[in-house]
Length: 339
Ligand code: UDP
Ligand code: MG
Image (cartoon, rainbow, N blue to C red; front, top):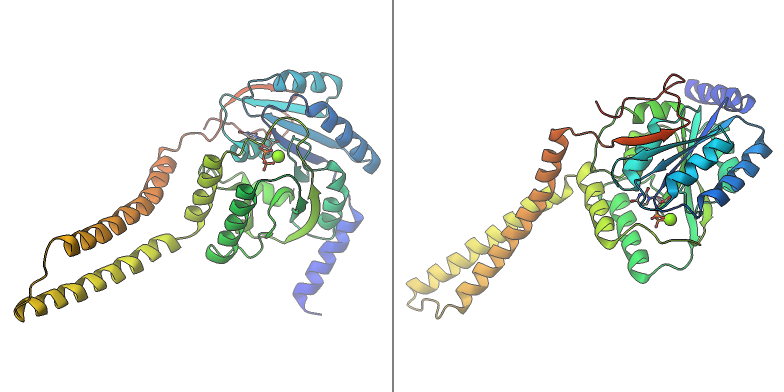
């Protein structure tokens, strides 16, 4: 057995013996007033069965409905429930980042608030953590009731992430539900990127990652906040944050177009010398449109990188907290949200 294996085995045994002193569950919530009470009941049933100390941090992403009132009511009933409300709707990835920054547990489980991710999977996530994993992805086994566009886009997304960006660890079925060890959480809190997929960022961070599968439930109340526009932005964010392949492809394409252009120019020049210059303007139009279109496309790709660089350079806070309940700033890792 190598030194490294000895080290890993020792670590694993150490983990097996210990349960987390505190397990945090974090949930971003947007228009989830109707789902939160049921989710609370289910989380409680699972966690009480595990006899662990736990906390549930609910991050209301500036919902227009009664979500934060429900959070307050739950926190008044059970002081393990904590809530924060963002000053503006920031999207589930930013909301989740804020919630993660407020988790105090030895490990933390990120769980959607819409009942699609069953809290009954938590013991299995915890088992993998005890076995020594630092990141445990719960990959969707099968999903029900999704449109062809959603499934298609999701396939394209995970294919791009695995094949183009090179994140082979990313579950090909997609994962929205995961467990992180405290050390991953600490490392994560040092990132302040805005236009990035949090799942991609965690995959990029490394550590010991493993995957289990679960069955993503259908939404019983409300509807998914993922519009086509948001999905496309996430796709471009995820690729541009971790890969320069599009820029390199632009250079290659530019080179090929230029090569074609020079070759065509040589043919035109030769024909002109031979006494038959090109006729009419249709050939010219084809060339102008082809080159013009390619240039526009390339400018667009470059623009995607440039505006992201500008946005990050402004260094605005990723999130601003408007209200909170049950979060005690003196207890632990509450970090200032506005630098
Ligand atoms: N969510 C959020 N902000 C938003 C949209 C969604 O915090 O702007 C929350 C939502 O309440 C849910 C989680 O993020 O708890 C996942 O969102 P959704 O169900 O829309 O995603 P899907 O299940 O379709 O991937
Ligand atoms: Mg959902």
